[in-house]
Image: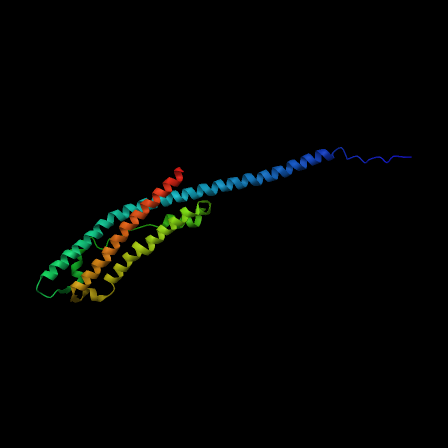
Length: 210
C-alpha cells in the first residue's frame, strides 16, 4: 500500500509572501504619511489665513475708532445747528449743501473697513479643517460689517447726494434731522461692531491657548 506524498511549497514561496506583505505595508504607510502631510499643510494654511484675518480685524478696529468719535461729533454738531435754527424766529430755509462745512468739517469720512483677508481665506485658506463654530462666527462678524456699518454709510452718502435738490433752497430742519438720525445709527453700529470684533479676537485667542 502506497502513501501519497504531500506536495511541498516551493522554497521561494515564504519569501514572496514576506516581500509582498512588506510592499503592501509600504504602500499603505506611504498613503498614510501623504495624508498626514496634507492634513498638516491644510492646517498650517488655515491657521495662516486666520492669522491674516485677525490682523485685518485689528486694523478694522483701528479704522472704526478713528471715525466713530467724529461721527458722534457730527451728531452733536447737527443737534447744535438744529437748536440754533429752532431758536431763531426766522424761517429756517437754506441750501443743505452750504450746511455741510459746518456740520461735516471732515466730510462723511468713510470707515474704510477691509474684507480682503477674509475673502482670500475663504477661497484659499483650507478653513474646513478648523472648528465650524470659529469659522461661522468670523463669517457672522463680516456679514455684520457688510450689512451694518458699510451699508448704512453708503445709504447716508446716497441720500445726502442723491440729486440736485441738495443745491436748492429748502426747509433745513427736516433734512438736517434726517441726516442726524443717519449718523446716530452709523455711530451706534460702529460702536457695536468694535465690541463684536474685540469679543471675536478674545475667543480666537482663547481657542489658540486651549
